[in-house]
Length: 52
Image 1 (cartoon, rainbow, N blue to C red):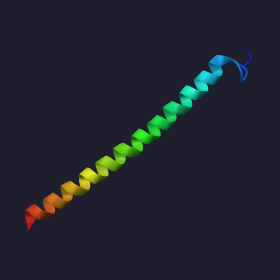
Image 2 (tube, rainbow, N blue to C red):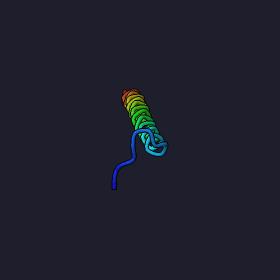
Image 3 (cartoon, rainbow, N blue to C red):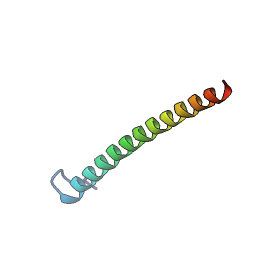
């Protein structure tokens, strides 16, 4: 079975959907990581303050 050509609507749509899903995943992952790192940092800061 031959793969659909670059101009058949479904493959273009699938490609766009895949690309945007990948982009969304990367952006979401990066944001979540930054949030968790910031949360961890502030938690450690609060913990250090409590010890002193």
